[in-house]
Image (cartoon, rainbow, N blue to C red; front, side, top):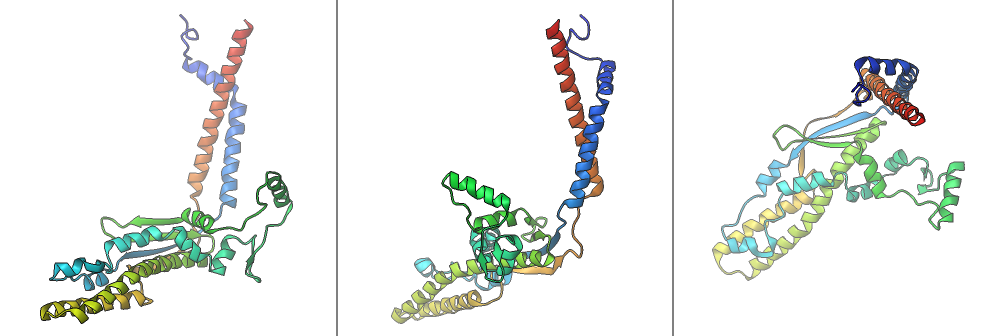
Amino acid sequence: MDVKESGFLTLGELLSIIAQGKKILLWSVSTFFFISILYLVFTTHKYVAEIHIGPNENALSQYSSRSTFPSLAGAAGLFGGAVSSGDYAKMIDLLTSQLVTRELFNEPKIVQAYFPAVWDEETAAWHPPSGAVQFIKSLIKKAFHRSAWTPPNAKQLSDIIKKDFFVNAVGETRLKKISYANKDPEIAQLILMKTLDISDKLIKKGNLSQVVNNIAYLESRLVRETLVEVKKELASQLVSEEKKKLALESELPYTYNQVGDFFIDESPTKPGIGGVLSLGLFAGLFFGLAVVFVRYSWMDNSRQSAV
């Protein structure tokens, strides 16, 4: 049985096939290399804003006292309003949620930055995009009984932000490195700080209602209680809850502390030129080889069919 009958090609035959398809290889490599150059020229260069945060340990220790009377701690959900690791984790999870982006929609500067074609800064109102392409899209949608155009929403903004928003752990610690990239350094910084602020305030709002209930319960118990030791314990817990309330109503961050300085790139980040061009060359080479061998296989099958 010869080589072709066995279904395998020798090294010489492989090299011969590649040599015959050198024009295809040259075209493929040149095309992908040119695409790589275009990518480097036209890709959006972005500035990265970065901040390190950790849980608000001071508040956690300040409000973590426990009652010497277990029956008091179980009633009315007392002692549940303190800063906890759960609050810190919830705040992190909220950063790119739609709950936060709904609040970001109230910032004209942010809306203008992400949806400039459909937001009128002067009138602070949405308007349909103009142009022939949009006109054709509108006609097609109307033909299928769909709305010709709808304004952007919180979900769209959330999806856009998530693409360049990163939360990374710092070693084995509870610290987090939070970063966001945007072509405008001012917007990169604004988004990072606003998402932290809004997420923190959402946690505050949820905890505040619980603390207010706790205070009302403790005040009610103090009025009715007759045992001196219990009244002292109630008074102590009332002071603790009042402190929580002050912290929750403060403008200072509640769930986190900033660690170190805020950082933002002085120049935009750029893709590695060598890496992009090398990727283009290898992609072009592999694509070209695939075309060459598919072409050879098709021609060989055609010859065998003719025979």
